[in-house]
Length: 535
Image 1 (cartoon, helix red, strand yellow):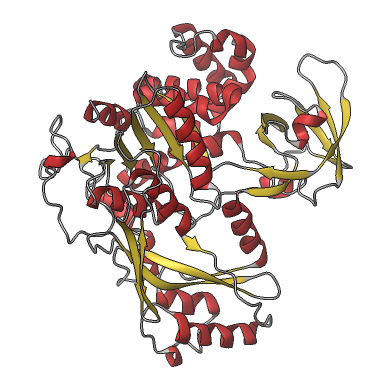
Image 2 (cartoon, rainbow, N blue to C red):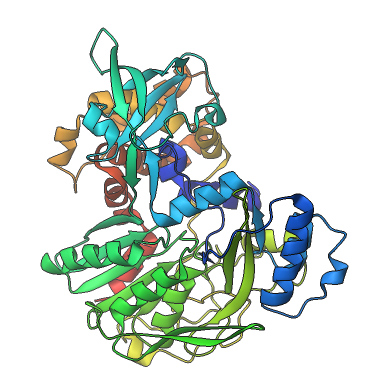
């Protein structure tokens, strides 16, 4: 199996919560986070006026000196790519989605779905949201939305997306079939404001070690984090593992607010500076509620921007240990300039620097396309999967952060971990990739395992539940019924991965995101390493 193919498979798996079970209708994750959205006056809306306005803004605001006369003949997207990889033009729909995502709310009904064969199958319902209040439940099959038949037609995601979206207070009619019921039922759901926390999971791994996973830095992340942290402390937490893997960033202020929870008063968290932006220091306030306990932060190659601000501050100030792999390397700050038609310009106005003055932005000197391929290059050259015999962890097990060796000040970009954990590729073969692409694991869970294992049976044995050999045999039979050409050698090689992910999908169906992480964390190499390092 080619390394790039293997990497793409592993990257897809890391987002399996979304890819496997669909998404909140009316809500989608950012492709590239890390923006400060400082909305200014509305600007002109014609394309010619937009380009002129964009060039003026570049002259007044861009992080570096730039000769805009060379950019005048280029289309908007192309001229922005000439600047840096993160300055971007957003069409109206994308600008709206970004605002809703970072604000942590949207207007809709609040449910998740999965297209099981050709049927819309409900896999998640927001607690106390409009769908829940109306009576929609896990496992329901939605047949019609208003006058549109959505099941039995093999509709694409683009055709389905947005059918539940609409202004709060407006109604949407839903025809559905409850599990075990012979007759369909029609419900009227009144749309409302749906609040989505950026805290994916928060729970105790053991009696004194808490685990919090954050997917993005939105407007309410520091508030949500404070609440999660407080609950864990009340439950007896003395040590914390903060999981920032695959967190692409978000609001700058949310990152500094979160870092503040760990630091004593008057410590430099980060500073920003640009050609037209004087240096601005962001200091801790000393009001954080976890200034003393042991701390480990998990990062990987998809940890970017605001996440790197937190990791860099904790590392430079010796507040905790960083476990994982080198982060993405995005150290550019964007400001958003909106246009009257709802589109917007996200322009890089500054760079940010860690307390020790490190700019973690990786090079983009070879152009936009090379920049996008950089993570693939890490896989190709073995950075992600090697044992890193030449890489000396800056924190030796059992010695603690006070014995941290001097960090390398010049890196290829990103935050280097104190303790390196390689990407585990065991079991991720071509046949497993085929199963993932055909969504076979999810199909098996929703068609078979949810009928065999009710939530009550699992909840009683949440920490010890395992899928059996008979379950794996049932899965093999399921493949053959689906007319999948089985490579038994690769199937058996992937067996541990398959069983782990089947369990994770089942747990998420019944217990949400926290259930998913309770299923995968016991076998997670980074979590294990962090637990060991916090002893």
